[in-house]
Image 1: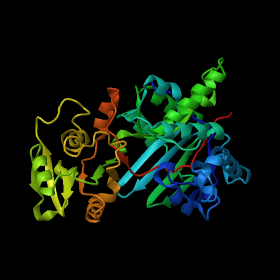
Image 2: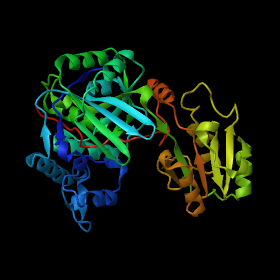
Image 3: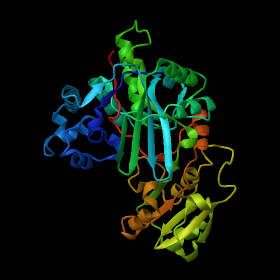
Image 4: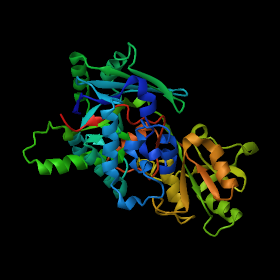
Length: 415
């Protein structure tokens, strides 16, 4: 069973929500975040990326970034830009982007579910990013950004979700072409029904936010160690999540570009690829749509090719090996281009599918990269299959859109 609970969220005043709410910390560079927040004293980026509130010439190794983040959050509270709800609530979060609408439950999930495997992951975390988010949450005494989870098909939870959005939302605004709406559910009966609904499922799955999830677990373990008589109900035993139904989510491709051909000529490289894939030029040199064609697109030397893996080039019964990204890595990136560690190899870069194939053409035609690969997106079922087997997806496998905003609701780690 999955354990969730309502909480007293810290949220912007409705009149300031557009100014407070910010993109996730890891979708912007420090320079981009500094520019975005420069004329906006209310921006939550000042909390999640506190480095932007120092002069760019300052040596950040000599300042306390986390104390500055805490000061910035406290300023939002002191000037009443953000207020804390009086009642324990569950927040319903709906996003509309292009042809996508997704609605989920914003609530607290149990750290023990993560530690025991009832919140399933599919990626490794980077120690530096995990440490950074752990320290930030600990000093803030708060969880500033939600972990993005999903639950497998469940009619009961779906029906409850439908029943929560009949009235006017508390927040309703558009940012970066995405419409964001929040409803606040504080009716004890409905809250209890939602909590009971989640108790009836076996697991939830991380879509995005592995580092925030690991950070919450680290803070919890540290505080349990300092409080050996903990009851399990203290705020640090839970963390902020938004849990969406699986059937509402959309994963976009995560494409690859490589700087060089590992000493091969274009002709020799294409020839070697043909030994491992069925390679056909794209008709009229149209960009290959990997989703529609169920093939890997390759753009090189101004030409598009369609790559179809041979039936014996991968284990069709293995949920990880049968991913197109794994097939590409095992049969091309590693043996032909010498890229065995894509997580750290500087010769490869990753392009979110939201940028489309035009971005791949642009990067290769610029001369910065020699070849690009448009890869079919991972399905939610495939992700769940990997997670259920405690497997780890290849690096940069999933790109979820739209992105959740930070600062809409914050979970404070005090009563």
